[in-house]
Image (cartoon, rainbow, N blue to C red):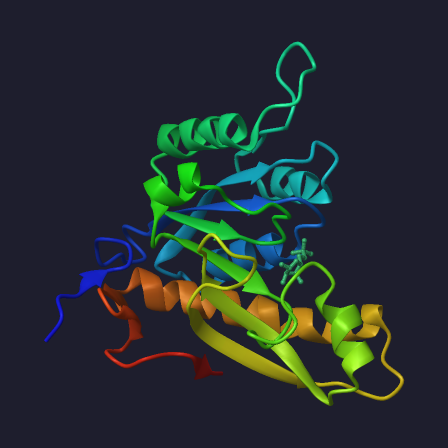
Length: 228
Ligand code: GRF
């Protein structure tokens, strides 16, 4: 049997929860739902750091209201020059290390990660995407779903690799698409599922149910995805 390693290296518990950093670029509703679930349900993971690459992201205000430590890691240096992707990620790495982070949770983070970040955090970065991957990757999932006339959409939690929404899928949840949906109405319906699914999958990771093997990721010893 192929060797297996725990995705996060240890089995966490409510007393010693997995320390997560949420990276976001916008509204942060997923981050808020995650933090609220962590606090009300005594989960085995905790959000100890929120990082935004956008200084005006509303997610920062949500983090402030939730009393979660939050920082901006922007794209300009002190002299106003734009940082390269690698320079920006070195700044992210410093924040993650300073806060003893164990898992990176992307929640509306609108940047692809380079080998700088992936090399250091390989297998310990997850993302949530508002479609049933591999269908409709990219930044305009709801628009593309509506244009396709499909009657089923949903959300996907997946491992992050160098591609755009291409990493191994861990779990999905589905929602119907109605003929009179707009991007806003579909997004709202999908977000209800996103806010339920993400804490659940992070609990699987934190409690050792997700393992990495040379052949890919396993959930409870079997090949995901799981539809929840
Ligand atoms: C979510 O739909 C998520 O799936 C996608 O970006 C959106 C972020 O929304 N990756 P919010 O910032 O959490 O409100």
